[in-house]
Length: 312
Image (cartoon, rainbow, N blue to C red; front, side):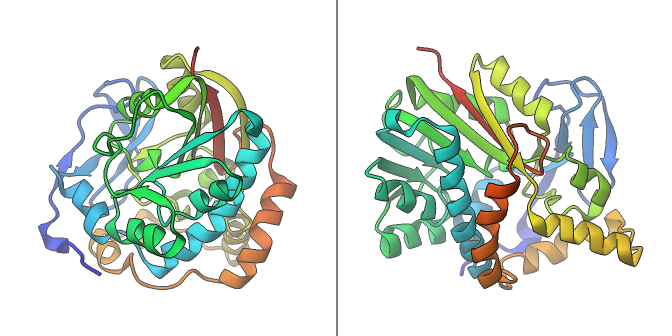
């Protein structure tokens, strides 16, 4: 797999809040190299530095993907497909766009339901897998360069993508432009304000400040929808059992993790695309069942789904 050289990736300061534009902020978690900060005006959490220029897009295009990501996406796609069935009136859905489609497993699930399904994915490796191995329709490009028609999808989905985006308001505008009038938009992201995130602190594994750069909680995600005039239709959240197991293990062992021992930029960039998805066979059986049993109609869990509707 091609990788851009770690030493060649420049980072620049992110001087303004990506949600409200304010410059005043305070340190939330002082990770080395890339502290996470909280906006003093709107309380949004965001990484204080970004990959410069086109380095961020090249990071995803050239080098993003691994066996670990593929196995994780296979499991997550089953949960996301269930969440869609739970939240969305599928009788109204005849066309589906998955933005950040990854390896294409969710597209495969939706296609099996006889829904015209299209995805966009920046990672060359992941898009090729979906095209070649699954036979799904994935455009290996950004959304704006995909040649897809705007105002043409009954449902647009964005699962675990918005936290990677430097400018979430602009991104939401773009997502919404592909939704038919009266159609639906569903966004899923980590809840960085959840109880388990607060209690784990720097040990919350979704703190990946070089790639997870925009960190939502329930209020900031709902506010983003409302600011764009999106009618909130329903919501759903749950906390994966793996996060609870980590939390209770640390508590029993008396482990207190620090920013310094949880994130090292150079090490992460070198190692993040290696390794395997731990307990894959167990998680393939358990994770969907856990989500179905524990999900609640709120945004309090560690993973949040928010469904909105575009005005007609």
